[in-house]
Length: 117
Image (cartoon, rainbow, N blue to C red):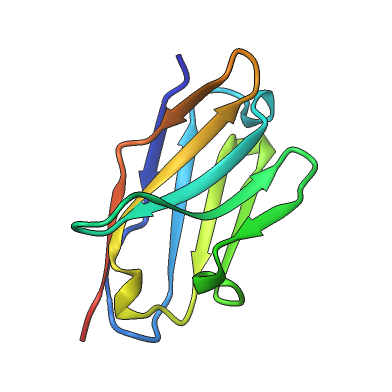
């Protein structure tokens, strides 16, 4: 079973930047997509960004132009570069790998991002 380990979260002031990393225990190209989700207190988990094996990307409207998803196949690692952070970006961020068949999702343990002055 693939293991995912996120890192890079922390406390940052509004307008600041963070780079999240997601290290997988095996090749990420076995999977249909890699994505980043977030969950704020009292809210449902939501998709932040996703990259498909064809390198097409999808972003939530709230992060377009500020966040960038990428991956390094040699390192089996995905990234989420977050710029111009806002207090409403505060949440636990989760890395996800999605397999089409058999249909299955793998999740990391999450990393806390807090945007506050």
